[in-house]
Image 1 (cartoon, rainbow, N blue to C red):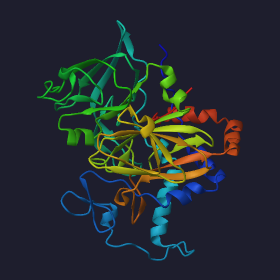
Image 2 (image 1 turned 180 degrees about the vertical axis):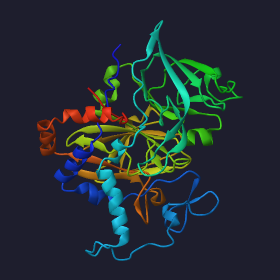
Image 3 (image 1 turned 180 degrees about the horizontal axis):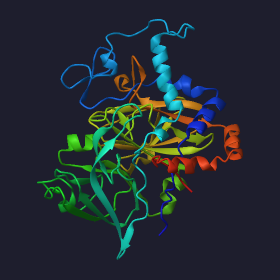
Image 4 (image 1 turned 90 degrees about the horizontal axis):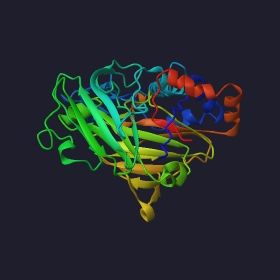
Length: 412
């Protein structure tokens, strides 16, 4: 049986991101200034304080949040040039993104699980459920979070339709939990809902889930016990089932060269993409003419309308099910809690294009962009040539060495 190819991440290093932005006309700074802002803090709710941003659970502005500013600061910038202090603050955030903050923050999650152990034809995955300290960006203090295999999000698990799966979870928490494979059709006594289909996984205990992967496409695994807290603090991950027929897999069917998981969350860590908040979100990097697949997954409590600047998205699957003749094209896609949508994007126009939630309180405030914002950076042939001549292949290796996430997977 042919296995899906899930190689390592392609994430821009500081040098490559800056060079790419320069060679595309500085588009990243111009594009992203229109879309983002700093990440939410523990205890934030989703209500705006005026137009500035969320407020703390107790009704007061979270310290250091956009809402903590009493008013918009449009006073003249000390740097002059007609800029305001707001412009200066917004620019500093974008410069952190341009500087490659994602790669500079340790503890990226979502790396591929790797090769499972095979026992009697069964693929065996062993995962721990852990307390972790997790940073959503470089400046905020770490959160008291949770993770599978000590990662938020947990490891990306890729299997093939028809595979027999055995997933063993060891609970290292001081509280009970349960694991639900969201979107999979599995035995009732392994559906992961404590007191309904199974007993809770008690602190220090393990539980084994065993099932055949039947539903192809984009799925998730997450806690289903005290889930508001546990999922909100990071107990979530991607579970991808590739079709048994290799001709139906995304690289061959749609001609995509990158397979990207995009998990949103909006509670304990604020508004995040793959466990990070702008400016520490990972840019998506592609070459002009390349086609990519983005698997949107919503693990949060709110709907998020994802908007890509500059080009459309072709929506080909929902909740793992192929849309066939119902496939559609859009530039803004609303993803409800629990939903998964697969979007194919033709990377046509060179530049750095903002990619963000279009609920504005989730992306931009008085101090600039934050939260659910990243960019699709499309490089031209000149940029690719410079990378080739300067050892561009080392960019991937450098990203891996720095512990970068593998949500962006190069196919083939």
